[in-house]
Length: 199
Image 1 (cartoon, rainbow, N blue to C red):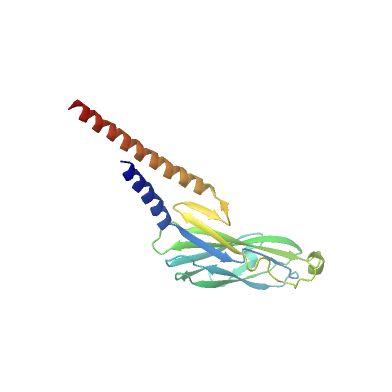
Image 2: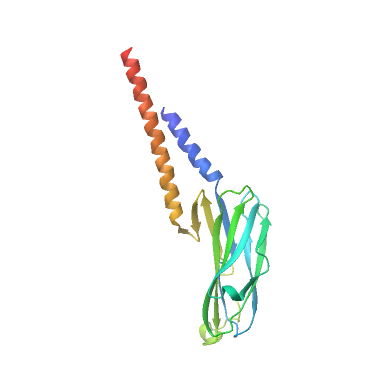
């Protein structure tokens, strides 16, 4: 009986791992220093580190949503394929603005997907780039080698290493199912014992 429970537990873990989908992007954060009205073109490295084909959907949110144009809003990536997602962004006003380029990964089978974002901060006017970051070129990208990863198993999401509530809910559901299975096994075992003793 113990062997059957161990096998069941391992099967549940393996099923959860098989259904997991990982999303990775390079340039999870960039800080840009354009002049007011200057359009900047940049890109985000989108990485499919899965062993399956994924559909990538891209959207924009945040301060400069209406001033951000995506070259592509959707494309397909083969296993271990990488592609740059280009965008342009600008602000007509001075100030500091934060915008998110949201990257969604969906398996071609249409199961649950995972979302991850790249944060783009525009510092327009005000202090010069030299005052904010001495010795740095205008328009360079912070954390250009930083790779941010999101992992989803069922409805649970890890985004940039942070545990999203869905992960906790998924773990509770898995634990609940496991407890129910264990109770059923124990009840059946007790019934079988009673029948044996009655004979």
